[in-house]
Length: 180
Image (cartoon, rainbow, N blue to C red; front, side):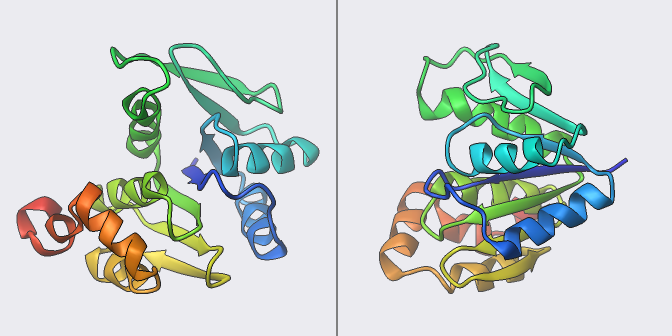
C-alpha cells in the first residue's frame, strides 16, 4: 500500500474543491495518509478525513504530545533532543514522514518555508510530490529540481529572497551533489 505524506502551510485553514478532489482520489485509492498534528493544513485535512471516516491515517507527533488528532487515528511519536516548541522540535516529525512516504501531497501558500522544506526533502529522496498552490489555485507535479525551480518561479520576490537566505535554495537547485 502507498504511503502519502500530506502537509502544508499553517495559513491554510479551509480546503477548497480542488484540494478535496485530490484527497478524495487518495482515499478512493486506499492510500495510507501520514500527517502531522499542527494547526492549519494538518488540522483542516484531518477534519475532512474525520468527516469522511477514513481510517488509513497515521498522525505524527513529537515526543508523544499530539496537538491534533481529530479522527482518533493511530499515532507515531517521534523523539528528539531539541527544545520544546522550536522549529527543530517539530521538523523531526516532518523528516520521519518524508522518510516513510512513497509520495507527497502539499498544500502550499507559496510563503511557508516549512512546506517548501518538505517538498525539497521528498524530491531529494526521488519521491514525487503533488503541490497545490493556494496562490495560483493550481496543482503542480514536482519530480525533480527543474520542476522545483518552476514551482519557485511563481513565488513573490520577497519569499524567494527569504527562501534563498534561510534554505540556501541555490544549493538545492544548482549543486549536483545535493541531488545524488
